[in-house]
Length: 170
Image: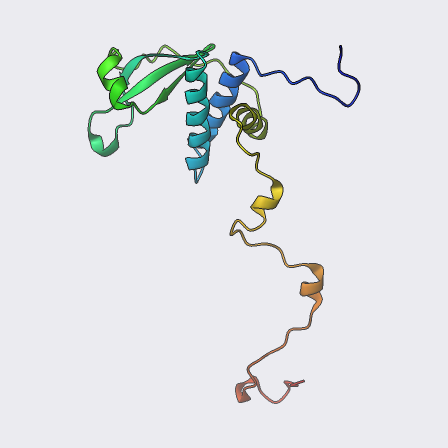
């Protein structure tokens, strides 16, 4: 039976669509002022793809940007046409082959997808609650005062003599 108007078929996104969404989220996380949530979304999605057999671990590569200048390795994961990396677990270090330095000739294909759409795809896939715009209301960012607040007269609570002769108090 075909879905009627107003109903949508629940189809899971293809592996390549998920990989594109991960690519976009990862790309934005690299330049975001607070990237933790984006990297966590990437990590959770890749772990679910691995558990479902839709992605596979290829091996270990030396990290391009090791912490504290100490040599460090990353797990290389393939999903669709895309390659990603995650920090290794102890089991990964024991079981995966080490592939040496990262090949500069291997690049991910370009993806054209907005960050909000990519996040929605990944959050839906992993079953994470989708952020609402209301959650950003009290995010600590300064807000514009309402028109009513702007039109209220300024009331000086400090009645001081330094204001001079021409100042009228109440």
